[in-house]
Image (cartoon, rainbow, N blue to C red):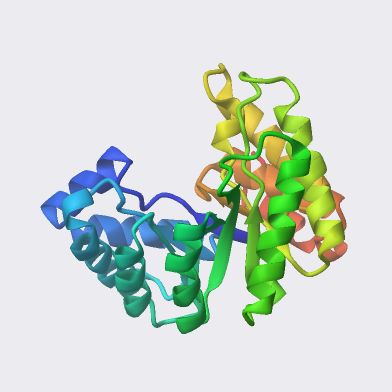
Length: 265
């Protein structure tokens, strides 16, 4: 299970203020607590700093790497900022968030994937836009996987994001994603799937409950990576319990260790 810690994102007020004030100590603290909570990658996103994104990306990474040696997920819509981040993320194999099957984005990001030998999050979007049906998701995922592997990208480095739409906008949006995850994982053994969970609950009450339960449901369909807040105790407890129930925790050792540490109190 690969967990991408999502907290270092300038869309969050505290992170944006720290970046503006150049409060490196705070950034280091947030990186460290995510590592201690079980993150395996640290996401770095400063896309809201449009005019200073490159400089802010470099500054964030410099500070993160003073606190942790975890690999980094460089997250930006701007290929220039992606390159700047990847050049700094030399401590371990990096990840890029993200590529799509849209021609301009594909042409801009693919060279970076190959140059930096990076893992890649791939969104199920193509030149026709967002997937309208489950069949669209499967078709786009197949196209992206086929094209990436043809370019020499290892299947194990590909993380397909099937794109979650809110159930408030359509009651079938949740179950369609669950079906897509299973079909993608079964159709391409060795590939990975990932997502951010919060879209599923958009505009609804009790969002944390919906997000947590949807994570459990997606795990049962094969999803093996998430972009989330690893310091959220209830989310982490649900993830560890689900791993035990799904046979992903040998002799339930991780579950027992977490119980002893008070995670389930």
